[in-house]
Length: 475
Image (cartoon, rainbow, N blue to C red; front, side, top):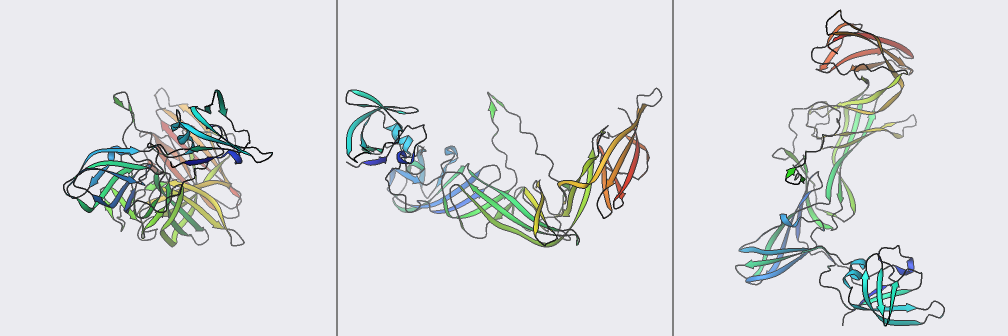
């Protein structure tokens, strides 16, 4: 009888010492059962796997097993394509062979318990019947009941066989009905969770020359429980609608939109990349192996000397006033346009910005998340708060205009600059409704939208400046 040896088994749910860690003595798979694999990976923890395998099929009905499918496969999405082949039934066996699962499946069965006396090395063997494996192992040895404990004594358990329900690898079992027998190709398609990707950008900003080098990386992650070997990989940039969870019979509301990603103006240029529907496709140039529990990076963008500039911005909520000066945001502005920009569409990700110090070493100065960004867009990425640039907003006066329902509010914005170079600070006042009128201002404003107005305030080196603006509003 084929037997399985487990070394030093302790409580299933308790931490095990080095002497009592379970190690099944089984040969590891030497190769994958996958065939020619193509993977399409989306942004929302979703991937489409297309696995083309060669099968020797008899005519009529037969049960075929497909090992090495994703451990997070969605069985309801499985399709199988082949000449004259139909699916009668399919089962996904996801109960994998682990020490804990092996012990739980042994409940009611008899195993061999081996103990070694640490004093003299003598080995004793007893047959034990497993009664329970819930948070610990309870067994019957002869007329006594014992709990298998992790007490540091060398102990191992020998199982007589592997239960049929346990699999060494995730396996899909399919009952097929083939019109004719022989060796023929079939393609297994399914959706799975556990595979994802994102874009990461490394930007080296040259402030004196107003230029920036940008390296774009595709970051692949595999938490599916299965490795995919030598796969053709295609990435989809865009948000595919996920299935909506329900509460009873009613669908739950969609999640709130993500926070702003620094997009000032959406571009109207088409990138030189393959598109499908409303999505951009990013095929990896070569086949790649994506191991389980692995993060892999592949370069997809490399731009040198793109125009970029630093700016300082302060956004004040309506009637916002501060007792102390507040730091302005330090932002970096650039374009994704074909001329004078990065010249590409940018998948959603994080832009990490570096600058060289006086010794020429690149130093990290901040990061900002962006959404899917069309080519030709203008971006303004806040990388942090400026140390030397401060703004103090003050509500100087606020009164009702005669007996009308309108109010007159005068704001003063005090701006200081402790740096050795002059700067321009963009002061943005928020909360201006459509009928708000700016009746007086010391610097000409620019209306950004129905709710915001902006002033460009020049501030001398190691100096101060002030902006005054009066608003007529209903509130």
